[in-house]
Length: 259
Image (tube, rainbow, N blue to C red):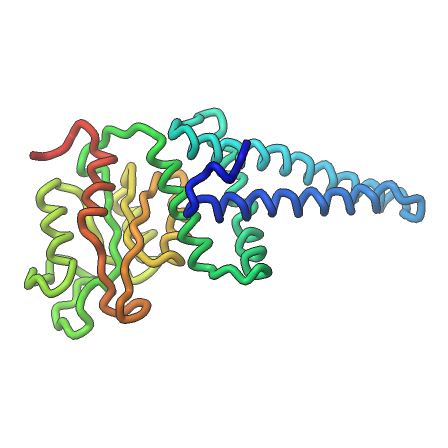
């Protein structure tokens, strides 16, 4: 299994996962050495051996999970049997991957962007045939012009569709396909709408940080992430390429596209 064969943007996150696995393996060696040391009491040895057993189990599952991620990306095919290990690998080692990135002075947004690319690839390896009403588009309120008096975070219908920002185009997309759509100010409101609409799939528009947390919070609901553009800095008059959002919606709707 050669990680170098992966596309560049996905390679970073997978490589950090692999390094995290190696680091956990070194920790296991250290724990095992301490557990077998004659200087330890029987009680200490039992505790350390129990910890070693947990580490071994976690490493084996995570190893299968990382292998499943690599194979899914390389062959663009869903491996159902490895869904569980892949979730374990990502959830268990993602914080460690971020910490390793900090050690190597890798920009956190680069790592999170790579994670989003990997997540999107894993989602796209599956087959969907959802009704429009089963798809929820979550977009950030910062897409709206900061000087617009018609605030849409409470009610998206307050938008006057003047065309000065991307919100009007997103609403046209919603009306054309009949999907669900909400504008959110953060993770708390996003989770509220997910509970309210109970979607079968989500298309999320946000920055790398919010997309990363949103993908993890929404699990096991599949999420396709679309990163917004920030020409004026974060959370201020951001922009989005609406065709990318439409393409993600159509992926989930295979067979139900509206002409």
